[in-house]
Length: 80
Image (cartoon, rainbow, N blue to C red; front, side, top):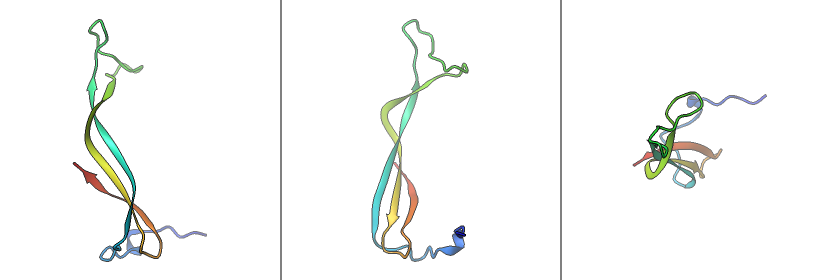
């Protein structure tokens, strides 16, 4: 049976020196829009529908540590 890994299984003081960028996920600013009659567009549940704009307000970066015994994929952090 596989062992569930925990925080105690890793040495965070030596996480490695070689990393590979795995994924960058943008988070866009949102806005509420109105239709041609000036009514706010709503979801089926009656809440205001939010639309993504072109402005990126945050990006999440995932990296893979390459020079460790077991390659570790982790969420490194948020930027911007």
